[in-house]
Amino acid sequence: MTSMNRRWLLAQRPQGMVKDSDFTLDTGPMPVPGEGEFLVRLTHFSFDPTQRGWLGGDTYLPAVKIGDPVRAGGIGVVVESHHEGFKPGQLVQGTFGWQEHVVSNGYTETGPVTILHPGITPEQALGVFGITGLTAYFGLTDLGQPKPGDTVLVSGAAGATGSVVVQIAKAMGCTVIGIAGGPDKCGWVKGTAGADACIDYRAGNVARAIRELAPKGVHVVFENVGGEILDAALANLAMRARIVLCGGISSYNDTGESRSHGLQNYMNITVMRARMEGFIVLDYAKRFGEGVQALAALIAQGKLKTAEDIAEGFENCPATLRRLFEGKNLGKQLLKV
Ligand SMILES: NC(=O)c1ccc[n+]([C@@H]2O[C@H](COP(=O)([O-])OP(=O)(O)OC[C@H]3O[C@@H](n4cnc5c(N)ncnc54)[C@H](OP(=O)(O)O)[C@@H]3O)[C@@H](O)[C@H]2O)c1
Image (cartoon, rainbow, N blue to C red):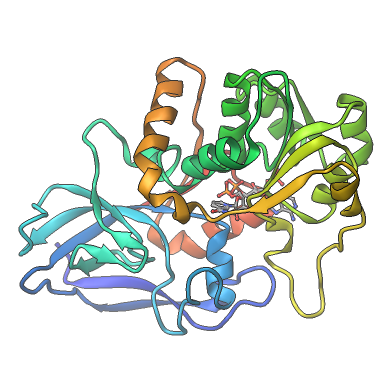
């Protein structure tokens, strides 16, 4: 084993899109686990739009400090252990950050380190059974509460969260309209994820396209993008619609100079007696087991197909984070070391 360890540290708070110069690739000595600790060699990292928020300032978690490793979920293998709960060779999952090796006492800042179930791959653990799949499941079922026959509109439909929402909604007997960037992604949302229709938001007027596909309005909006796309959805609500405000990636790179679109159609929430509600998936931590079981059942029934987009090489962490904001990923963005 190498005696050195590399870590990506936050050098400065990004302005707009993250740049390589916002980070420093630090090489230092290998950390040594003490009593009650174990050493993990990271093998897979999860890439999530919320990381951009963590780098910019305090959100639902404290901001990543300048000079600290970039916060990120990951999976690794235990290589040395002085902790009775963890053995060398086990695969473990936690918010370990962008570092090749890390010493852990069994907890990270977002919760306990967990041992991977032998039947679950690292890709599944970080994707469909990880934060994004669980966000799709709890956001749609708990907040969206779709009924068979409802029309469900999903933005970011070719992404990790959106693609799972599309398929759960189809399995629940809904008509599903996806929104995604470009004809290839839209083809995948219809052909593989099984949406009834998909609107390419880059091709034209989204509000008009929704109106043509759902002239009586949409019952559930699962919103991942915000801004103009949310506004287009708000213009097309059915009576008592539920808008699940999962994310608003179109504004995550906003700076003081560039502010995102201000909503024009929010009064339609009043007119249509609709409900718009936000949530953070970590609030459902006690119910994650239930979510994993429901998602596993859909996979076993052939109703849920997963897609992972896997980059390689620890040195490519910053570029891989950018892919989410450039729309380059299809499905869950991961990086394998
Ligand atoms: N509330 C929670 O607890 C929670 C948990 C997890 C995720 N989320 C949110 O869920 C959303 C999706 O996250 P994810 O991890 O599944 O990422 P993802 O959808 O796999 O990847 C991000 C996608 O967003 C789209 N996008 C990027 N910039 C855009 C822009 N300016 N306008 C429109 N679309 C843009 C791109 O798709 P196109 O090519 O189609 O544009 C890109 O592929 C994010 O908003 C995230 O913050 C919330």
